[in-house]
Amino acid sequence: MTRYLLPLVVFLIMVGFLFAGLGLNPRQVPSPLIDKPAPVFQLQQLHDPEKILSSEDNIGKVWLLNVWASWCVACRDEHPLLVQLANAGIVPVYGLNYKDERGTALQWLKQYGDPYAVSVVDPEGRVGINYGVYGVPETYIIDKQGIIRHKQIGPVTVKSMEETILPLVKELQSQS
Image (cartoon, rainbow, N blue to C red; front, side, top):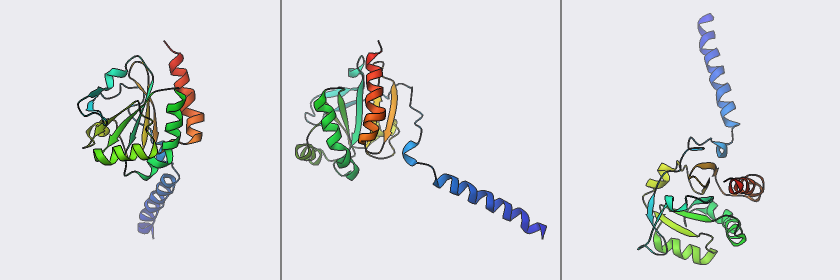
């Protein structure tokens, strides 16, 4: 009888861990890049492939990096909020077009609006890997020193905009 007891206990412990894991929110996975320098990149601009944007071009200002793609359904959900944010002029929003076709991406922005100060192209997803992108959309808040201060996994929502993104942006902008 006792020889069956140990496997049963091990099984019950494993079931307990499974249920505990199922209760976690996958959008709240902590990023190891928070409070660390943002990965450096130099990428072609989506609208003008002759021009390059470097992440270092934004040193000295607070900015958002939004990882998006024309094939991403959830990107459509957040897109109107990004357009509103860009129109409000509160913080510059830069786009990282992830694993996408240039022509399709340009058409998508023409159709839905272009909230990006500049959008750069990451066709193989290498820069996305450096940023720890799990999937699109993802949005990063980067401070004046080039440090990642927040990572939004999944689409930006009204709630995340009002409760997290805008307050953090305002706080970071007020710092010298």
